[in-house]
Amino acid sequence: MSDQIDASNVVERLLKEAGVTDKLPGADDPELAALDGRIAGQCEVIAKITKRAGVEEQGGTRIVVRGWSFRISGTVWPLIVCTVKVVIAAHDPTGLSWKDALEEAVEAIGDLASVIHRLDPAQQLVCTAIAGKQAEHKLAKIKPDGATVQDMRDYYTTNKLQAPVTLDGVIKALVDKKVLARSDDPVRGAFYHITF
Image 1 (tube, helix red, strand yellow):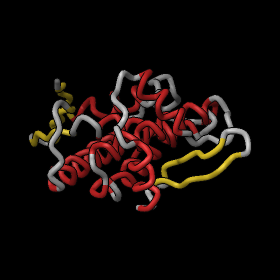
Image 2 (tube, rainbow, N blue to C red):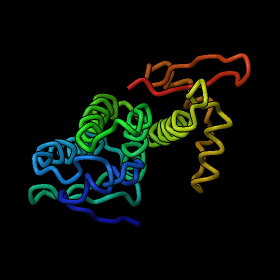
Image 3 (cartoon, rainbow, N blue to C red):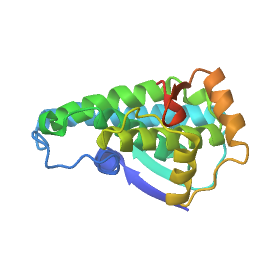
């Protein structure tokens, strides 16, 4: 199943799904259109990269920017959203403006664009789970804010997703690629966080 959004609301939808509301100061500033365009452009870059990499998946999100239509595959849109969630969650919400949120989103999506070509759908799904749990932990002030393997399994269950069959192997490959970093905590054990 696929749904469609256009450039005028891709940013609104992305930030809403990442937990940013239009109640932030400066949400109606007309000068923010350039940042909206940069975010839509970064999503376009990611779509082109994943298409060039030959990643074929069912579903996804179809986006129209400047009259050009592209599809972000089924595992990539949630990864974009969770990546933005992580950087937004790192900020004190009382001091966050709409412009700050947009700038953080541009940077986060740009960082993701630099590594997305190295990730297959299973690896994207693992990164999404880790980023989602990282954001949750940051918001709840849980330290360390990375995700354990059990956190990932919980994420898949909660979101009604199928965990990769070889989850440990996918995690190891991502650590080897330096897309994930592993740390050990005396209480929580091994946990992982995204490095982009």
